[in-house]
Length: 242
Picture 1 (cartoon, rainbow, N blue to C red):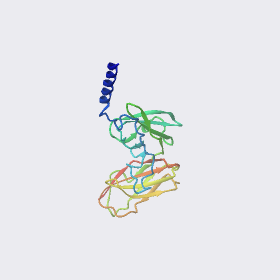
Picture 2 (cartoon, rainbow, N blue to C red):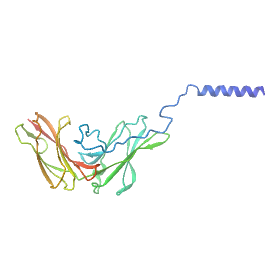
Picture 3 (cartoon, one colour):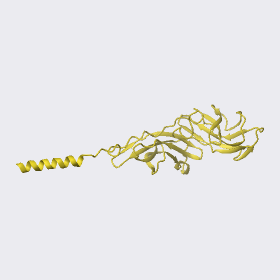
Picture 4 (tube, helix red, strand yellow):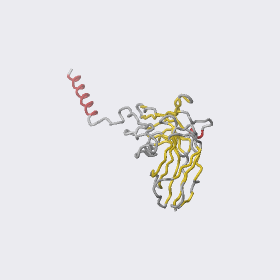
């Protein structure tokens, strides 16, 4: 009996010693935190604080592409991106696994698709995972509209301060809003002009802002469709004021 009690005591001591000093890891020993994928927050020019880097899911000036923005997970869990469309491709498809600390992804599939992807609502969610489990973000959606086609001035056109500066482009007449944007060389928005009612497929607008200092500037035209989270961006063109 004494030997049995002695063995039990020794085992208890060993168990206590083996557990002492071992603190639970703040993230590794629990399910991943829910990731945050940002919805569309508005168009450039809607708010002075909105930029192309912080306004959530949006179209992109490089083509028929949708850009996603999310917060970097505090627990360093891995991120996987899924895309679907309830009318076009209802089954969620894994499209990218993030292997770096990036928090931005540009979906180029839409541009390379053999079918029309405009006027289709595309939905996305991201999945945070570790060796224990996974957690999905909320779903965000965006509908691409046909892109405006810039006419004039051409890329790398040169002007002087005394020249009349006019911008022209073609657009889809079913757009609900057009916005001409002019950026400085640091991509700060310095002037914009909004057309809230679109009746014509071609527009020309004269610059009416403050006198431009010599340097490089960039211009483009953004559109919005019938819903808040829809639209497109034209290409960006550079002009120079001598």
